[in-house]
Amino acid sequence: QVQLEESGGGLVQAGGSLKLSCTASVTSGSITRIDRATWYRQAPGKQRELVATITQSGSTDYADFVKRRFTVSRRNPTVYLQMDSLKAEDTATYYCAADVWTPVSGTVNLWGQGTQVTVSS
Image (tube, rainbow, N blue to C red; front, top):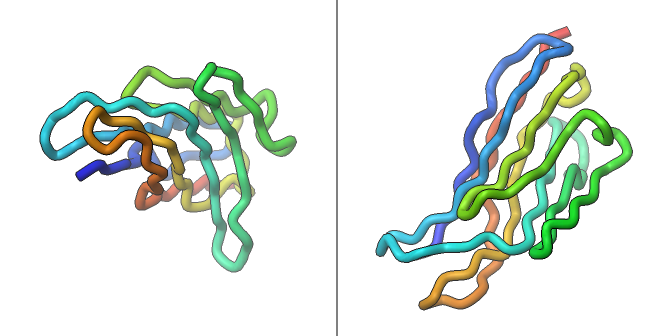
């Protein structure tokens, strides 16, 4: 079974930093590879919004509200979201969605369970 798991969330003061991780794994221990991945976030009472994307080729794209503050990167089988200069409005549950490749399953699209980020002002 292929799984995707986020980690790295927590409580941080405004202006601080956090680094989120999104790791793909297979229960059999087989190799995995994250191709395209997107970070989303959803705050209470608000719609889910796209934060950042990294493509299979390594190209990246960011929402305007995180440009020059957040950086998405990949070192398979993990995708990272480095978040700097955090603001109170960045408080949300962050989700990773990714196209994950394994030798047995091929490419499957998965979502992680989310990790909470809370920024205190």
